Image 1 (spheres, helix red, strand yellow):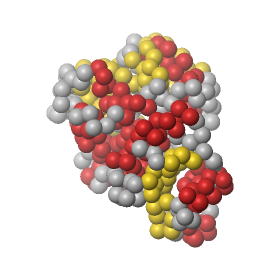
Image 2 (tube, helix red, strand yellow; image 1 turned 60 degrees about the vertical axis):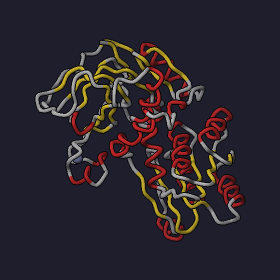
Image 3 (tube, helix red, strand yellow; image 1 turned 30 degrees about the vertical axis):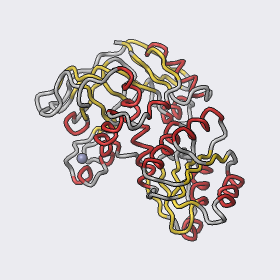
Image 4 (cartoon, helix red, strand yellow; image 1 turned 180 degrees about the vertical axis):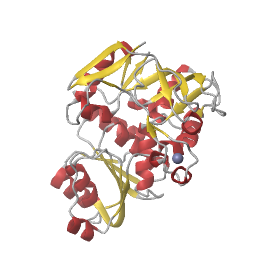
Length: 338
Ligand SMILES: [Zn+2]
């Protein structure tokens, strides 16, 4: 089969790779219906994260189960399934507490930008849909595999309550779905921080009531101004840089909460600043597995349409163009069809 492999900065190749096989009794092999490029794929793509030689790319996926190992009891060949970027047993103490991305047996699922994918711990990781979906549902089901689940976790970690004032830092796919998640949780005022017109439009469609295009000091001042000097009850940090993290902490009111899901790159927090900020901080790799059943249900009954974040769809063999479009911010998120 042919799949996407990252060789170095801005060098993604679609090339021949060995097809995955069942290696452990708990594995499944799925035939990918759709996959995509993640914002976090752009870090190694831009050379901002070390890359130890050619790396098969992709960790967002949905598709049809092709084969299962001898220990797999729940997942069956022919089912349409969705999983998250970390495989989890869904039975250990951390999984039972709802933190499947800290599973004691977690394993990163990589190489999804290909026609076939091996998923370890299949019974704990994969959630089947009620039936094989119609084609128009595929983008939203794929979004549930990472970005929607991550936006949802950001809103949960930021303790978004009905009637709340919420700020979302970051206008990538996760930030935009953080806006949608805040609306679903009943936030009254949702302020999206974005300076890109197409993203502002989608943020409004997902439920943003205000747009702030300033950043850093000016952004914080603007949030203070429109919240009568109080700050937001909840802030979703969906970028992972020093400026965005400090922006989030400084936009929240005393006693408020920051939910941070942007993978940190060079973020350092000052103890004294943190001490006097009086904020709750919670975040990390989103335990998407916890939310898969409920989010799949909402997509299935067409309550939500998170697949709208895909504004570019390409055949998988044009994967390199998909990375380029996101790198140059011409696309919010690229969907790839094998
Ligand atoms: Zn576990």
